[in-house]
Amino acid sequence: MLELYHNALSSCSQKVRLVLETKRLPWKSHVVDLLSGEQHAPEYVALNPNHVVPTLIDGERVLIESTLINEYLEDAHPEVPMRPKDPGACHAMRLFVKQIDEKVHPAAGVLTYGIATRPMVMQLPPEEREATWSQIPDPARRAARKSVIEHGVAAPEMRGAMEAFVGLLDRMQEHLARGPWISGEEFGLGDACALPYVLRLEHLTLGGLFDDGNRPQVRDWFERVQSLDAWGPAVGDLLPEPVLELFRRNTEAVQSELQALVESL
Ligand SMILES: N[C@@H](CCC(=O)N[C@@H](CS)C(=O)NCC(=O)O)C(=O)O
Image 1 (cartoon, rainbow, N blue to C red):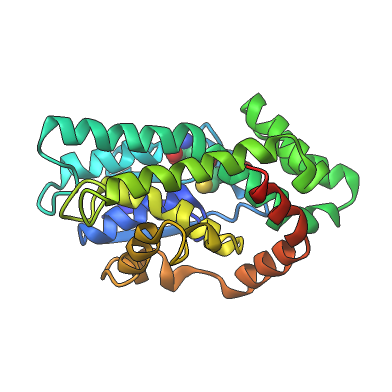
Image 2: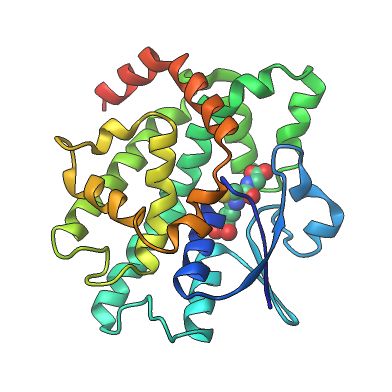
């Protein structure tokens, strides 16, 4: 059976779980607690040298990188197809995913740690606080984490992060003007990749960026994703309500700063 090392709120885990569940593949769950630092445990790092989730185990194979895992699942289990057959449409989907991986994913870390997780980390003694980012192996990611924890919404990374999210919503509007899903008629790899980031905006009380009067096609898409059979087991049923409540409270505490940032874009 497939085994997934993952975390309920991790975007990259959500996108892989959406593909596993859409393809109706049984999988065994291994939860990695990111807040307590289980991603840095030597036995986990032996599987994923980047200290991140998700990691998929398929027999002898250890697979990392969420986008590559999803492509692997599509190649290994094509019975429920999630990638367009037309080469041009497939290229467009991969470009959409690449832009999310390169721009929106780092931006999600900036927004989440700078807004929602920061108050918790700031309560730790300085040496423990330092420990939350000191083990991150990628220097750029480590520097961004330190900056947003220290400066919150005022961190210089915040503006670019918000712009990356707005760019994603605008690209989604363009795709959704052409069909019900990112690549056309069926929920596919592009949709699975976008969902966690749209959901994160909602969790950070930034859902107004795609309400009925503002990018309505994204709102309609978001509601349709939540009516899919895959939604509950992949995302909805796993969301930890107390953590989301904390996200909401921490976001509300910086609402006016956040609003000013959104309006200045
Ligand atoms: N490029 C990687 C990124 C994975 C990633 O950033 N995972 C995050 C959660 S979404 C993580 O494990 N973060 C742990 C940390 O930053 O300490 C992928 O697509 O799998």
